Image (cartoon, rainbow, N blue to C red; front, side, top):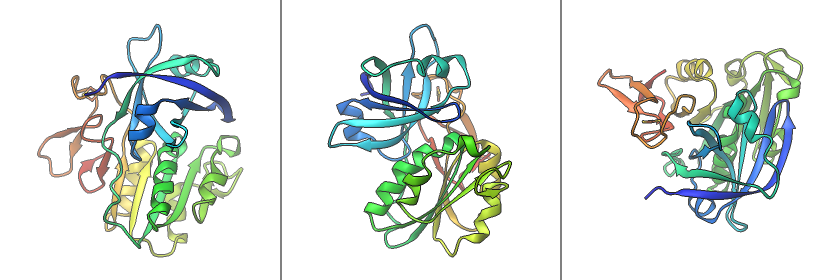
Amino acid sequence: MIKQEKLLITSSNLIAKDTVELILKNNHISQNAKPGQFIHIQLDGFTLRRPISIADVDQEHGKITILFKTFGNGTKKLATYQTGQTINALGPLGNGFVYSDVKDKKALLIGGGIGVPPLYHLGKRLVESNIEVISILGYQTAESVFYEAEFKSLGDTYVVTDDGTYGYQGKVTDVIPEVDQFDIYYTCGPTPMLRAVQEKLENVNGYVSLEERMGCGVGACFACVVATKDDTGYKKICQDGPVFNAKEVRL
Ligand code: FES
């Protein structure tokens, strides 16, 4: 059963341009969260909840990490919350990344902007499962770059910026040819980026995480649907996803 949880803020940091990292203490969510899952935050004074993916989990200390960009009223308000305050959220929600069948293989993680965080939690679990990890991380500009060192601790990491002020200049898909053979890919980011990755890697097994459009977050409102590739209908991002097999959904 999904029930509302209280999460205690134990740390709040601005880690890049308009990008806030919150570390939150909650036993239920930290013990149960799988890579790719999200929490749905209820802020005082806002009707709609905000879905935010889980970027890291520290089971030993009962903590999770979330990252978000402050581009709307809700996230701007969340950025004002201080250590010691609590927030209410449902979670962990959704179906996460599938990786039980990729043992002894090489995985490529491709993240764009605020789609980067859930790939960090995934990357850590992959490395623990002896899966080699290579990451391509795309950002708008040098000031927007975050978690580069964290991803480098998992494996080779390529950073790309739109304006070339840091790392490679261009799109994440421009860097894919630099990566040696890989067996599977996992990607999260803006829909145009996901579409470009899906097209470029159409012959490779992969998973995409979609999180942009959501209402209720628990399968009741149909605000979050995505069409299936075989045109047989729609899937709910909040309940059937947010992670889908790349061959399953039309972006
Ligand atoms: Fe309501 Fe998915 S957000 S059904």
